[in-house]
Image (cartoon, rainbow, N blue to C red; front, top):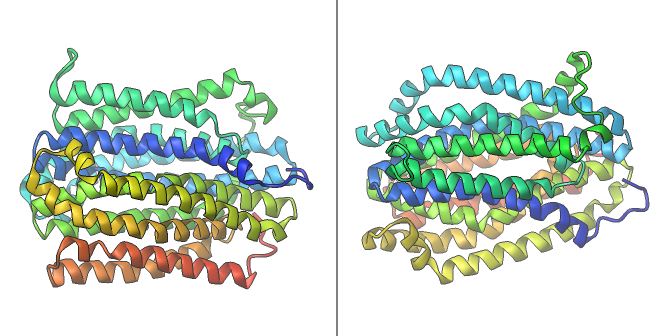
Length: 445
């Protein structure tokens, strides 16, 4: 990054929108699985969400490490040290692949008792376990994709994510249709078919990243794929920045998983309605994931280039774009709620159950946008342990509210889902206070 180079709204958008498309890919996997599984009934739908969320908990282990790598890559780009980027990516790739294989082997054996301890319905438990056992196979592939996403976000060249998105989405939709119901000459696998389709889609995504990196000759510019001698200090550096994020993201998604376990105590219908709301909520939140990754990378680049004074202007521009897009999607989801929910289910009673909750989360999405952008700004400074602390304190309040409203008082779904307001607002407040303090200045990664 040149000293005179400005991070304009146009540049923020040029980096963010391919990441948003990449987020769309992952969310379309969820939406597609949800829409198809709902045709198999509430049990299949509930099992899909339980098994899927448990898988997402494991995904966050790799995601946290990859974001740690992304912060370091972006810092080196800001410093103009391009020759070191390739070695960082190679070590990040090796670390994540080893993590993925280890988790695959251990969780195939250890997931059953963990799910059994948390899920009340025997039918939902069986469906969830069946889904998870097939879905976990894709974990190392997902971690490969995370490595290359960290690389391309770190160097602010994210258009490759658009190509990967299209291929992943098309693969998953076609295979969902074929494997869940036994169409296109494929076996009828039911719940397991949705998981298998996503695994194949992740293989296509990882392969696309590698092929693009080689064909675009990007690997030569950043000295990638040379696989020189192993340097433990690079792995330790990545882990030093990444472990708080790994823990932060994993606990955050695990709490999200536990939140649905709490809702399951209200009944299978409430769980199915919440899964539909979750899927639509993810649509509203799509812009957030692009802008948070962009914030993370640009903050680190600015600090690396010695331009910390521009952070305030950067955050204003990011928040303006993010809140505008989130607001647009929230309005669209509210305006067409019934029609969109009809994609997931033909059960009118289920739609009536879900509609009031959708109104709550649409409004809560604004606090989520502010919270995640500001928290990622904290992470981008390199002070990942501070972002972990803010997240943990927020989650304590979040889980307390969720437990009281579900297990304790058995309140209605809209009241339960108000916890999303609490979560986003507390994240934003804690991150804003820390950024204003200036204590992050001088952090070395």
